[in-house]
Length: 530
Ligand code: ISL
Ligand code: CA
Image (cartoon, rainbow, N blue to C red; front, side):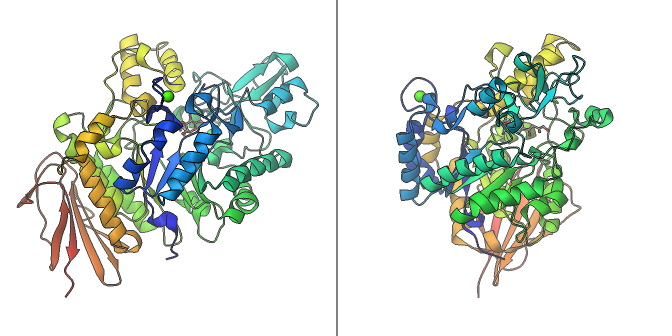
């Protein structure tokens, strides 16, 4: 197993808008983050993934970039960014930026120029198609649209043509088949690496290569997944080539780290993207564990942790020794995992600790999302007027065409990304820091143990009790050092399995582990060395 800093690191995702407000205008900012660096460092964080802080009109909270080389005014200045970077580095932490290069804002200079001069070089930076019969060039639907035929296309009246946007109508897809465009991206990436940033999280990076000719989408695939056309770009023909080029031209000279956001890619394609000798990505985020099969994010249902066991078992046993996995539950695009499992506040901390135990002792790199270390749960929204997210707002409008407003709101409440975008609760963080039974304290201990024992990072993993419902157990082993982990995945007490010989308790989510495992109890044991 090749050793890498990013395999050993604990990452922490910051969504700047809602992390910490440093100047009192109610919006999180870079100054606020700087003020919390000691908090992060004390928790044991090794690297921060910063969601976009670039100049943006905020149609999609910064995932619509107007200028890659400027800082969003609300978030601060480039001087403050530099101070953030050096503040992290001086504490021994690293910084990875969000790289959003599947699309830019329609307010980006490239797009403006592309529209101004349809015969100029920038026109081919995007995916324009001529208007033929007043109809969209194909039937693709956008992720943030209203599911109507061809709503991934925006009509550009200036030139009587259409432009592709897989996300909001202000997020225009870039044409990765244009080498000049690609070179400009590499130059921009190197500009940030030159500053000293340590790598990138690559937004929807598996969508960048679209099938030639942008063929019509299969409607039955569309009905199944909710999006028409996806089979023509979620794993496009030049994806591997473009990733290799990006790595070789921009990342490698700086030894930059990369983690790709790759919705829908699955384990086998994931292997091709992350195989150690393939020179594409270091890691990916796969999302198939975030909803149980048969459910979508906007369904009201309860998540069964037995599915999480099944998912992780498959990846732990099948991903192989040449790939390295990312481990996460929460991010800025999803409701909180604790709430998916149970909305009963009584179980909040138990579930939070259980999730932490799994995340920090399976084989892979944990990514925390701000607030997860406090056991953050969903927000009790009561009305659409409290919802800010472009995805939810558009979906609500679409749903209201086929159901009552109450029903539509219930669905938005189940899945809205705004659950994760509520302000970080700093008062609560202070309280939890003082409380040895808190989830914060538990996470801090887990992180410390993971740092202390390389077996918890590089050790072989062996899962046991495969077919026992509600029980998830596994061993980690490296150079004779052994650990055993046992988890109750349910709300019911569970007979504790016999403890393997010679193991002694190291950390438990409940005060005194007895004959019965408590609801959602999680324990870590270490083999006594003789
Ligand atoms: O693909 C999807 C559904 O199958 C979407 O959920 C998609 O994966 C997701 O929205 C992509 O997220 C990323 O890109 C978006 C941005 O809004 C998100 O915040 C970002 O994480 C567009 O840039
Ligand atoms: Ca502010």
